[in-house]
Image (cartoon, rainbow, N blue to C red; front, top):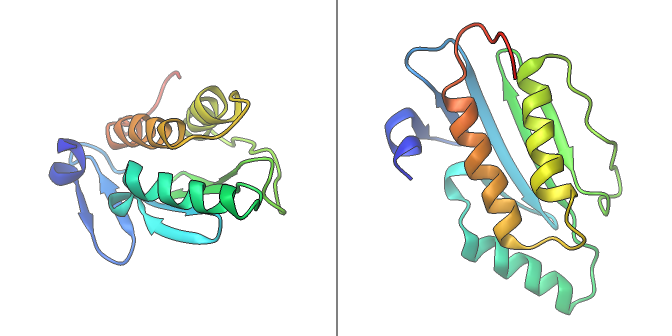
Length: 136
C-alpha cells in the first residue's frame, strides 16, 4: 500500500505520521501470541497463524496496540484472556473502536480478511487525521 511507503517508516515499531499532522502512531499486531509491526503484517501471515491455531484447537486471540500523541488503545477479541471492551477517550479513539467493532467484532468467526481490512482502513484513517479533529 502506498500510504505506508510514503508516510511511515519501519524501525523496531511502526511509526506512521501524516506530514500535515502532529499525530504520530505506533501500531503493533498480536495474533495468538505472535507479534508484528503494522508494516510487517500481510494476509499470508495472518492466515498462517489463524490456521495453525485452529488446527491445534487454540482460542483465536487478536490484539492491536495503537499508541500516539492522543491515542492509547489496546483492542482485543473476546477470546483473549485479558479481553476488556475498549473505551475511547477522544474522537480519534472512538473512530478506531468503531472500525474494530464494525469490521472484526461483528463477525461470528475471525478471518484474515477481517483483520487485514481493519488494519488497512484504520491505517488510512489515522495517517490522515488532521491536527484538530472536529467530528467522527
